[in-house]
Image 1 (cartoon, rainbow, N blue to C red):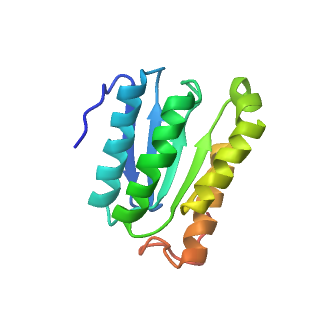
Image 2: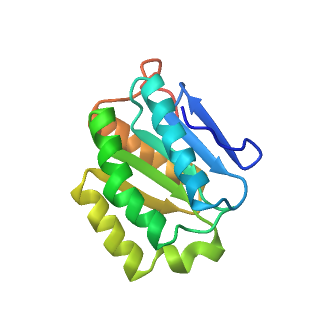
Image 3: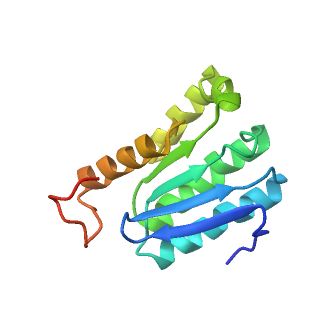
Length: 153
């Protein structure tokens, strides 16, 4: 499993939600960011090939071109192959990241991601992000086993 500085990144699997949660706590150089993504993949595999991720980007800059290319060309295809299906990622971004998240470049990146079975969306509200992930789980028939369909989200 890849290592990462725990003061800079936290990783948690929530079995009650069937969601893997990664939170960057500060900016990190690209090699360490790549390590965090590899750690998430390893954790996802340990937890039944979890394909529903909540990633909190609010305390780190949005990726630069080199990291975006690595993610698109190498990591996304690896994730899809190793987890056995598409990846659904809800990214939490802050107001300071809104312009980059809504840019034409990011829109093109998201179209490219969908072409390789990776579905990222940006949110500024964690509850909305979790609701979207829950909806994707429901559509895929992959709700957590212990979820009572009559219970509120």
